[in-house]
Length: 223
Image (cartoon, rainbow, N blue to C red; front, side, top):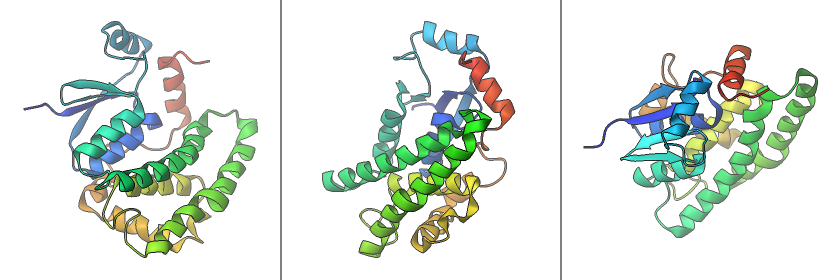
């Protein structure tokens, strides 16, 4: 019997947070092996456990999986969150690639110098309200169903709700004009596994603060 899933990353959101969300939504228990120093990262590299010398890395089913998309694809496929056929999977892939474009802007936002943050935040707001959220609102309106694809829960719904939470942390009013997205957020948030993940004290990480940012810079030897 395979052991518990283990996540190797620093104690922050970054590129591991979507993996935490998906595992939690699927009801998969996992433990975290935090990288707390450059030496911890060096050990994983020297032990040959990081194929491309970088994290996130997830121990699952006897594998050391790296590359965020590959990890998410495996989890979604294993837990029946990736559509029922190739067409549904293509739609899910298309939607989550769009989400990833916006989420990438949010992930790197704390890393920008203070003098650039106002302009970067304005760009995130513009892309959210004029490009990405209207597209997903249109999808939900077009079929009138509770979920993005196939009228059943998929990774696309989970990733989108994570994105909505991330956007609202930056600016709470950005979902005001998107009632179907707000309804989706409520629906997914009330699923028992997700509801548990959203509770205080769960394995969900808070937004990256200055202390966590400095720790990440030290661990990854960034200027």
